[in-house]
Length: 120
Image 1 (tube, rainbow, N blue to C red):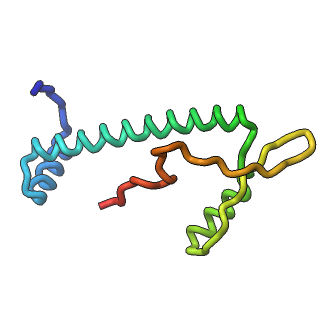
Image 2 (cartoon, one colour):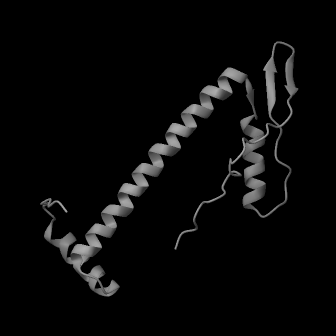
Image 3 (cartoon, helix red, strand yellow):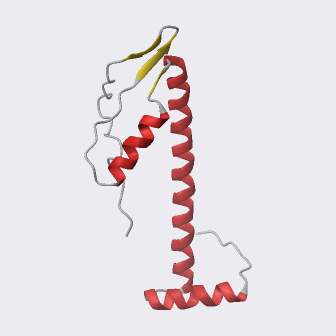
């Protein structure tokens, strides 16, 4: 294992030490866990942004999307606990907007939101 020296302001070090003691672990272990969580968070955000970029390129190439006002209304209904039908994607064209059939997921693809862990 490599060694890295970091300078921690005294007040933050005291807070970390108290939190570690409360958790029943050493300050060293506490700092390692905090660093691990932050690295995982940064990696997850980077993966999310990569995936979003890919989907945006795909959406723009296909010309298929769901209007924001319909997505927003659907999300607000869901957040309020209402059962709401998912808005349909449409292809924008010269003659207006035409509905498109929902895309099938690739073999092995997860449902949206599947596999997300709930906060502890």
